[in-house]
Length: 340
Image 1 (cartoon, rainbow, N blue to C red):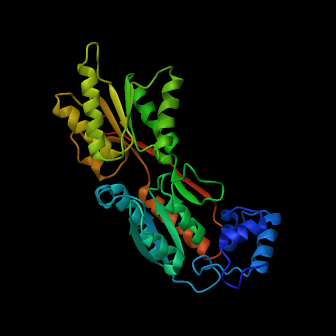
Image 2: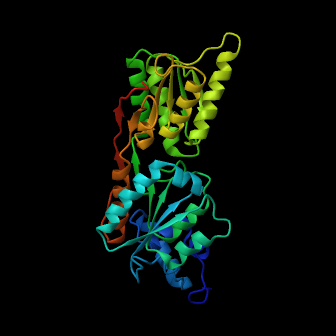
Image 3: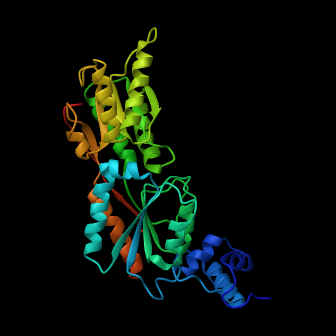
C-alpha cells in the first residue's frame, strides 16, 4: 500500500510511523534527538513508502551548496536601523570567512508568497541561522523542517531539539535593577521589548525578580518594540501619568534596548526632566547608540559580535558532522555612564 517511489509525503511517513512530522524531519536531517523506537519506525515507514527527502533536507549527506542563509524575520527598516543587527552580522561574517561557506541574507517580516521559505527548502542553502524571531513567525517551522538551523536566542515556543545561541537576558534585567537600587532608586519603570520574543520576556523576568527581592513593585511596565519611537511613546505615557492629579514620574527607567532608552531620554529631557537627577535611565545592548545621547547611556552590554561568531560556529559544526551543544549562553555586563 505504499506510494510510488519519490511521491510519498513527509506527512504520510509520519502517519505510517505513528510519529509527528517534526520527528520525521529530525530523522531525515540526521538528528540524534530521536528515540531508538521512533527512529526504527520512521526508517521502516520511509522504506515501505519509498519516501525521498528533498535535497535541502539531505544536504548533510548529499550535494552541498556551501551556502548558509541568515534569515531575519523583521522589517527592513528595523534591520538597517538597529545597530544590534550590524554587530551580530559582523560576527557571523567573520566566522564564515574562516570557513568554506558563503552567507545569504534573507530579510522579511513575513513570507506570504513562500519565496524565501521555498529558496531554503528547495536546496538553496545547506543550513540557516534565524535571528530576531517571534513566536508568530509560522514560516520558521518550515525552514526548521528542511535544513539544520541555529537560532539567535531561544524560542518561546521552541523545544529541546532547538540549537540556539543566546545571552543571559534574565541576569541582564537583574543587573539593571541592581544598579538602579545601588544608586538609591525605588520607583523603577521598564519599557519592554516585544513580548513575542523570548529575550524580551527574559529581560522583564529579571527586572521583576530583582525588584521583588527588595519588596518593590514595578512603577510601570510599558510595552515597546525595541525601536526608538516606542521608547519615546513610553516616555510620553509616563509624562501623562505624572501630570494627572497625584501623579509622579518614576525615578528610574530600564529600557530593554539602547534605542528605546534613547527615545525615553530625549523625550524626558525635552519635557524639562533632568537626567539622571530626576530620572535615571539604563538601556540594554551597549551599541553605538549608548554614546550618542546626552548624557551617555548606562547600559547592559551584550556581546553581539561574539554571539554572531558563535551562531555561525555552531551551525558550521552541525554541517560538518560535529556535535555542538544545543544551548550556548553568553554573559552580560553593566556599563556605567552618565544617564544612571
